Length: 356
Ligand SMILES: Nc1ncnc2c1ncn2[C@@H]1O[C@H](COP(=O)(O)OP(=O)(O)OP(=O)(O)O)[C@@H](O)[C@H]1O
Image (cartoon, rainbow, N blue to C red):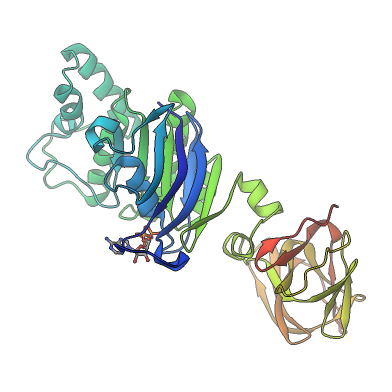
């Protein structure tokens, strides 16, 4: 396995890109650590597949260098890079048995017969296909075929990294969780470098140690699930991660005070001069409480979601969400309070350090 470094990498599908928007991937400088479990998370079209294809060599970046360890691999072919890739839809040889599908990549590399047998059996066990391993792949369900694809990604121990591009799309919802935990276990056991593309936050947060959040061709934050939750560095991270996402309210600032219409909120630290910027206050619903004191709100709707309630309210004409306990009674004259520990300030979408 190898450390993978993006050194000033950008990519545009246009021959003569001019504006930042012409780039499917804006500049990325980042090292994926050897043995790390990463998820690339973001909405459709944000550049996840482009980034993955640059690692595997299916795509040559228009600018910058890609390094495996200290070796520049930018001009190497996919094969020379020695990467395993699992795609959204199964890639399986129908006429071969399940066993031979897994053995194939090893036999191709002249791995001795005994070693092939041991490794294939071990992998079949992991993906739950030991039984019926000598059946032809033809006729298996989409789930089972995708398990074979996963197995083929995992069977080689000599690869530099394993890349997964939305690999659980065709898998039954109840099986998704099982396979995801299986991948996580494999990661812990073998320390593969794994990069997993998804637009599903649950998938990203349960699989990865580090989540790379992408938005409009940019990496907006790389962090542990807790960091993304507690300290979103960009409004997109606040909004995209969490359910419901972060409350974002346009404000004006004066020192330690943020003004929302006629109301004021005390900031945890003094704001710098942000003239000319769009300024937003960001507070997650988990840090937003309905109370008898604070800023007056109108409650629009209360959603009971089991262990707690989501209260949808309006503050100075802006929609916000707050969490309330399952049995918590809401006051007749509702107000909202923001826990200072959860107050963030954003200037032109990027988090401002309030020094608190
Ligand atoms: N071959 C191509 N030619 C031109 N534009 C492309 C090509 N492939 C992707 N794009 C564009 O580049 C941008 C990034 O696409 P990419 O497929 O990397 O996003 P993604 O995050 O993987 O999306 P999805 O989740 O839908 O697969 C999009 O605007 C897309 O339309």
